[in-house]
Amino acid sequence: MDGVHRWSAYKATGVTEPEVIIKNLDGVDPLLYAAKKAIGPQQLTEEEARKTARRAFQNNPSLTSSEIGKAIGRSRQAVDSYIADLRAATQMELDLKIFRKRLGQARETIRNHLAKMPELANQPKADLSRGFTVAQVAEKHGWTEPMVWSLSLEGKDDLERFKELGWGLRTWDLWDWNDCDRRFGDDWPGRIPAQLIAHILYYFSRQKDLVFDPMGGGGVTPDVCLAFNRGCWSLDMIDRPDARPEIEPYYWDLKGDFKKGRKTSGFFNSKQKPDLIIIDPPYFDKKRDDYAQKSISMLPRHLV
Image (cartoon, rainbow, N blue to C red; front, side, top):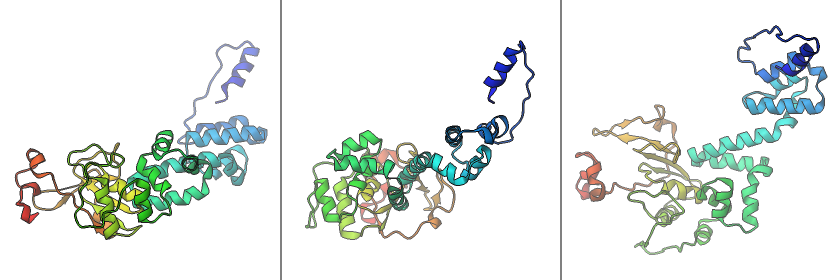
């Protein structure tokens, strides 16, 4: 705690082993304790107060402006001005995690912060407006491509989104694609074309609808929902919290009951009724050996 000044004073008097007092702060932020007790609020210059407030917030973002202000002898409003950009960055990082975790809810959250924090959130938009591609902007800012597409396509209707993505709209009732669009979803067994999900969304849902995907797999459905301004509530038996935190780990047992995965109970009761349910069935023969004998993949196809 500000030991340099004391050590210098002891050295000046020839003392080589100064007496020390060890104090348990009981959860009090050490930097603020030092500011209040060791330095003294009235002795802090404006620059010192600003630096102390910023360091304290960086060490502990849960501190309020009032708590910091009391320690450094400044008003809450002054502290707000000191740490506004740090708080914005912290909130944006949190929102981006939520954005991937709960796509439908977080879209509104991030839009609110886009208006409040242009110096942070508008950087990807600025790069897009300067002619950078979605892939380039995603790589530069560490976002996924579907997240950048959601910004690039903001305010556009579904037909405009099809055009921007380079997909033609199939108006007939037989849809066929040669390959999956690698911009959406992970490399996954039984991966389905993102164009298929986009057509389902176009014909059977509206923007801002909630889509339920109980067999999330590699994440094609949540990715396309993000690009097409739909919320997505997605489940899968495989839990991948690092790669796909928005897909909840859930599965049915052989009696048809839901069992909990990583998350808390009451998960289904906490959700609103979906506007559209997309079920991509198991892979049948391709993954036959990976499923239980009485699982849905073993049922006759006319019953599935």
